[in-house]
Amino acid sequence: MAAPEPPPAEGCRPLGALLAGIAQAAYHGNAAVTEELLRQQLYPEAAPEEFRALRAKMGGLLQSIASADMDLNQLEAFLTAQTKKQGGITSDQAAVIAKFWKNHRLKIHESLINQSRWDNVLKNMSWRVDLKSQSRHVDQINTPVAIVEMELGKNGQESEFLCLEFDEAKVSQMLKKLSEIEESMTLLTQTT
Image (tube, rainbow, N blue to C red; front, side, top):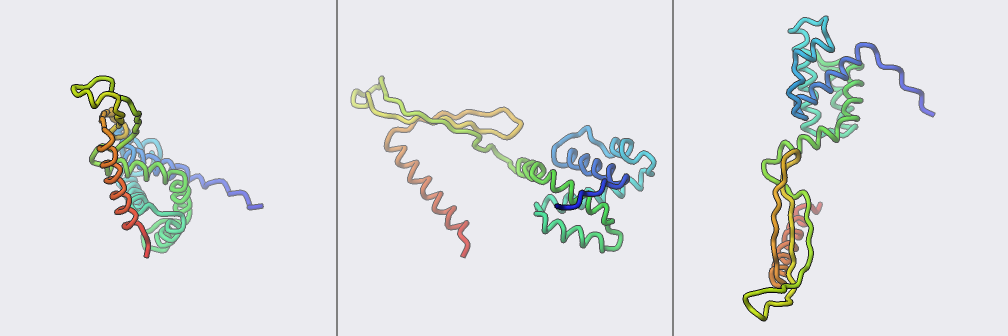
């Protein structure tokens, strides 16, 4: 049985909240979380310059951790190096940062991925096969057609819908192209 974790030092609680505030502003687009708000709420006794330096240091560390998408082993090595660095962080601060990253890594990573997309992505796709009941040409009646509906968009924005109709030849052509794409991706991701 593992020993219970000691309660966090009193000075660590505001640091965890500061990291959460930095993440809200930088990664989740919450413009209401300002530097002044964080200082007033978390470090009211700190001089503005002192708080600005702490916020910049923690913001820089969080940015380094997030941009590298550090796993827990990388994080431990990084934070250990930061505690040994002149003007670095304390071991208590390193523990708070590690706990914060462990709890928020996935959301921050997802936010960074969404922010880095400059175009729409495929959010959903549905399909069905219909038989043509009307056509200009009699020989096309009762031929199967695939109806494909794609939902395109960015997270947090209204989606666009694209509806496509494929006859049997177009479906075969599309499948061939998708197979070529799959082969190319497989070749690129294979490790040698």
